[in-house]
Length: 587
Ligand code: FAD
Ligand code: NAD
Image (cartoon, rainbow, N blue to C red; front, side, top):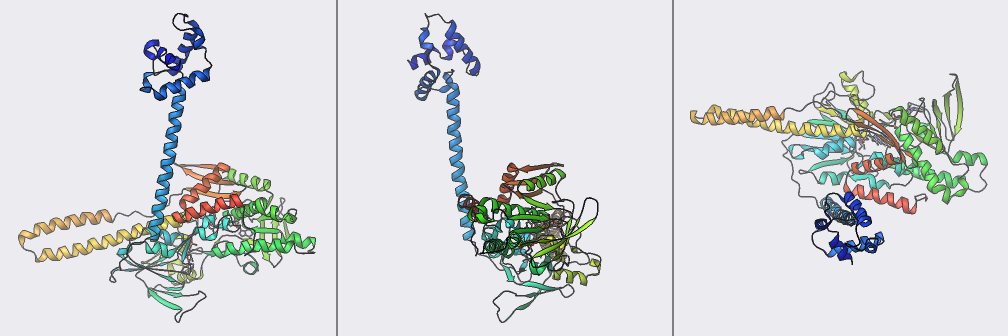
């Protein structure tokens, strides 16, 4: 019956065109109503639609070229084909991704043999293993130099996901990349000393370093000579000399800080539910105060409130009434670097999440159990109050490291600089010839962000690679000139041609423009699976906030993670937190 229908309604017979399925359907129905019973018995055409389609599908499945027939069956067939292709694409993508991840893992675990660079080559000393330094190391051709890295931290830390470590959404090791892994994958060997640079003698070209780790060998101090020096030591936490900050608060810059916060949150909770605790003490212990409404403070406050909403209140229901997060900010609003609508969005979202924002409130003093803050009231008058806290997290931005301050004091051109090492457009520290600075310790009129530090590091790698090539070409030119002066007349023309070629190469190589920062946008997580983003788009800017932005935030940071290993671990942590919840044990 089906085949009969198929035959009778074939395009040739009915005069239908394969390219017009809608017209075909119309013709089919008009055909059904107007055809005389002599051609086709009426009841056959009034078959229930689904049956008709089924019959067609069967016919086509076994039949010849699909183009040969045009009928109501075209639609289901296309859908079927589409699904088949989707399935093929999906499994090919899965196989390709698995292959890529597999290759990356194999590559990470099997570094190639390295060679020792020529000791006659220049020595570059790089201070730090943060965003600036690692981005430089990643792209630097290490065979051109003797590279020495000095840092008290033998790993790179992906700071954007550090706030997630404070509550256990992500485990800290997932966002750490051992510096040994990074250096072992360079073509030529790179020396690494786990030590803190205590002084840079700019005249003598020596870095003094000290091993400050727990285990000490016979030798704890070292003098490291350099031809070129890159300072990428970042910044330390700003306290503005406010009494009690260092003694009583937690910072959020390093892995140790995140671990300490995680422990203290749980300590406050377990202490608050201790037998016969007074009401006031319970309230104090469960009051989590964050000072600084920049992105660090906002992201941490959001993560902490998530922890409470999604896990803590479930496992320790006694704390429900009193657990409270307050964000204290001296300026009239939080997130000053974001656009106005995103600031408003963040503030209203915090209100919904029950996070208190205290703007125009400047903390002046910190004691063991409370902070003293001065707030400006709407009429302009000032009010000082004591705010009790159980946990205090201090996130008020950056300050200079002592080694940077000391270097600045040696260079007259840096006399008037207050915020860091002033650099020129090639990131050379003003007043020096062989010292460069990247990241938070350098002042190049950009915000102290990972984005800036990474681009500066990559720029220096390009610059140094070019300098090495230039040196090599210049050496060649010198040798060729000498050869030419001693050569016989018939050889001279050939050498001259070679010299011309090298000079052309030199001109091409020397063309490295000054550093130009390209701002990709700002992103911040604000809790409750929402994020805000100010993203650069052509010459403009797109501001967005909400759950879709949160997904964008997640995918952006996942793609920026240092290695495939980090990416896989972060994904697993996210899944673990989603399925099992965060771990509420205190280590
Ligand atoms: P760092 O990355 O801080 O690295 C400094 C390095 O120097 C470290 O390895 C340190 O151990 C080493 N060092 C310190 N002292 C010495 C010494 N005396 N001798 C030798 N080495 C030393 N930016 C963004 O763009 N996007 C974000 O989402 C973002 N999120 C952040 C979240 C948090 C919680 C924090 C704290 C910062 C965030 N930032 C973000 C800012 C970003 O992390 C910094 O701007 C960036 O780390 C600066 O890079 P850097 O290389 O200058 O310094
Ligand atoms: P920040 O400098 O951005 O903000 C610190 C805030 O603390 C300021 O708003 C300041 O007014 C406030 N403050 C200072 N002293 C105070 C006091 N005594 N009482 C109350 N408030 C006080 O600092 P941050 O958030 O640590 O960020 C540091 C750098 O890292 C910034 O450049 C930031 O852009 C970058 N960062 C970026 C991201 C991101 O893009 N998601 C995340 C974290 C950090």
